[in-house]
Structures are given as structure tokens and as C-alpha cells.
Amino acid sequence: MELIFLGTSSGVPTKTRNVYSFAFKYINSKSWYMVDCGEGTQHQLLKTNLSLNNLSAVFITHVHGDHLYGLPGLLASATMYGREEPLKIIGPNAVKEYIESTKELTQTRFSYEIEFINIDEKNKLEVNDFNVDIVELSHRVSSFGFCFTEKDITQKLDVKKLEKNGIPKGPLWGKIQSGEDIFVDGKQLKSCDYLLKRREPRKVIVAGDNDNPLLLKKHINSLDVLVHEATYTNDIAEDKGEIPQHCSAKKIASFSKENSIPNLILTHFSPRYQEKDKGNGLKIDDIKEEGLMNYNGNLILANDFDRFILNAKGEVVKT
Ligand SMILES: [Zn+2]
Ligand SMILES: [Zn+2]
Image (cartoon, rainbow, N blue to C red):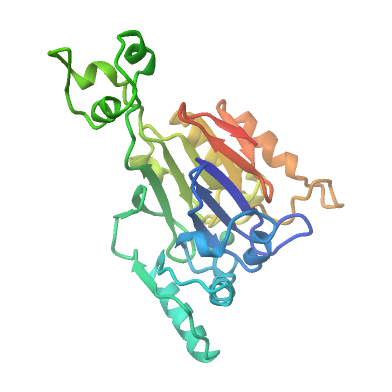
């Protein structure tokens, strides 16, 4: 699986980071999925090889502008590109209202059907290749996380054993792959003896804005990757008072350590953290340092256009 960061800033864009958007896909597949669509996401897409015609579904975590304002423009552009395939939009009901009212006010027509899926009262759904658990989070408005688990894991053939035992490549291999027992020289051979051990389905959580990681607890069993906001360092989060609305790097890193999450990708950084200290005494490395101090797994701070491969072993590697 490929994980692609289209925008990694919170609130407003900066010179190096656009507002929030994330995409993922299977490496050899053209179709792809988007989570959130901050303003300007369609400009970011122009710098990638992702096409609006191959977008399978859009997931929206919550209705804040830095996660949503890019969607009406992106949908209108898909019409300009001649999209015909229906598109699923999965999010709170307010997303449907926002899109439909914008469409009506601006007298826009789409060349394709939109299927809205309201997640306000849903905790599960299936989208093509994935089972999706919907997790309610804690933020100023209703906010959700999406837990994607691979649905179909094709069991691979034990090619070495097949070749060693002289089973000819062709229809017999196909039968074994589909779980059928075969006969060779009158002898029955069991398909399970020629299939490699089934690997665990990969599991990724992409969370919306959230000040309480414990709400993810129910879904972190066998989790490979957590993509979560770390808007601030802890000192700034504490200045925000009782309810900060967002996570600090310390809070999400400590939670990930306590729950042995192997890969943690932080994103959605406050614009007050730039690459270099711009006179406010803060820089993006402060978030990294705080994360590293509180977590011992594979910690990544995402930048715009970063691409990572989540391989079959559950490792995350930058491409
Ligand atoms: Zn946000
Ligand atoms: Zn928000």
C-alpha cells in the first residue's frame, strides 16, 4: 500500500505545507482513496500521478475548512475532466449539506453521480478493498477517524514446492490457488499443502482532529500504522487550557508507545512551527524531538508530497 501526504498543515497553508489531505492506494492500482480535502488540494494533486477520474472514494473526518474547503472545487474539476464513474463521499451529514448547497448556489452540475454515506450514526462500512471502522473522536465539532483493514488477502502459491514436486505450471496451479485439491498421476494432492501461510491483513488508522487518543483504543489491535495529528508541542497545548481540541506530539506519542503501535506518522502541524525558527522560538524539529522522547517505534513527521510504502510485513518505508 502507498500512503501519500497531500497537505500537512493545520488551519492555514504555509509556503511549504498545504492544509490537510491524505491519499492511499495499492501500489499497482490506479484507483485511490482520499481522506479530507483542504482548500487547494486539487492543486497539490496536479503535482502527483493521481487522477480525479480514478478517485474511488472521499472520506471526510469533520467539517472544518482546513479539511473540507477544497472539496467543491475538486468535484467541479472532475466534471471538467469528464468523470463518469459514480463517486462515494463518506462523512458527517453536514458534508452532504455543504456540497449540495454550494452546488445549488453556484448552479454547478456534476457529470457523475455522488453517493453520500452519512457516518453520524454508523460505525462500520465496506468500501471496495477495505473494511472501514468509524471511530468517534473528540474535537470542537463532530470528528471521526477511519480504521482501514484490508479485506481480501490472496493466499500465495508455494512455487518452490510445486516445482520441486514436478507439478506443471498452468491450470493445476490455478486450481490450487482457488483452494481446490488436485490429482496428479492418480494421487490426490491437497491445496493447503501448496499454499503459503496467509499473511495478516494490513490495518491503518487515519484520524481526524482529536484531543483524546484513548478513543482509538478499541481499534488498535494489530494496527500497522497510525496517521494522527500532532498540532502542537505539549507546552503550547497546555496554554490552550482544559480542552485543547488537538493532540500534542507528547500525547499521541505516549499513547502509541503504551499501545505498541509500530509506525506513527504525525501530520497537521500548526503553522507556528516552521522548518527554521522564525523568531517565535519554535521549529518543526521541536515536534519531532517531543515525539522521539515519548515513543520508541518508527516515528515519521509527514511533509507535503511524502510517499511511503506500507509493505506486506507491516513496515513503512519512504519512497
Ligand atoms: Zn484541522
Ligand atoms: Zn478541526
